[in-house]
Structures are given as structure tokens and as C-alpha cells.
Amino acid sequence: MKPKGRPIKTRLVKAEPQIVQFSPRGRPGRPDEIDLTVEEFEALRLADHRNTHHKLAGTFMGVSRQTFERILKKARNKVSDGLVNGKIIRIHGGKFRVG
Image (tube, rainbow, N blue to C red; front, side, top):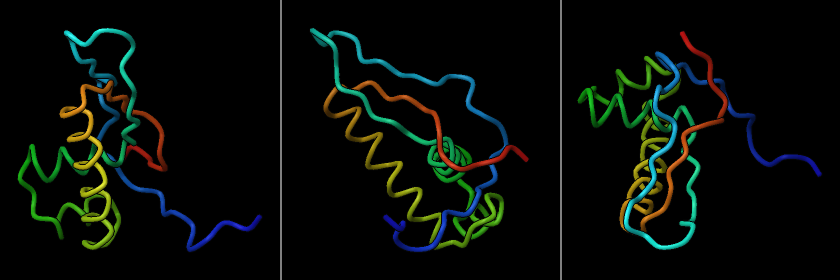
């Protein structure tokens, strides 16, 4: 089956995250997991931690402002789901290169 849409462009990230998993405490049993890609992590780092303007952050990652905002929205949804519902958040994968 042929993939839909355009191929995903390789995104630039400053560095791979040093901490790659967050686990909730106080939740009985094995919590569900959420996978956050490295480029989603980078979008959160730039926008929310560094307060970088979205157009500039998109330039840093080698994507348009609109693409950056889509990546950021997806990342925020995943993280909020993990926090609200007590899920493990794993950071790995995606299509990126360190630069």
C-alpha cells in the first residue's frame, strides 16, 4: 500500500534528550505509555522552555512555522494526556538529525 501524503522531512534538533522516560508514582499496576518523538520534545523545549517565537523555532528545526505548530500541538496533547491520566511518557524515535 502506498503511503499517503508527502514524505516527512527530517527535522533538526539541538541534541537528543538526556532523560528519555517519565513515570508516574502512586499509580497501581503498569500504567499505559505514550511515545513522544524527539522532534516533538524539541518543539516543547523551544516553545515552552526557551520561549522561542514559533517562526524562529521552525527555522531552527528546518520546517515552516505551520509545521512547527502542528508538531508542538501534537506534543502538548501527548504530554497533557500523560500527566492527566498518569501514563508513562517515553521520548524516542521520529525523523530527525542532530545539528
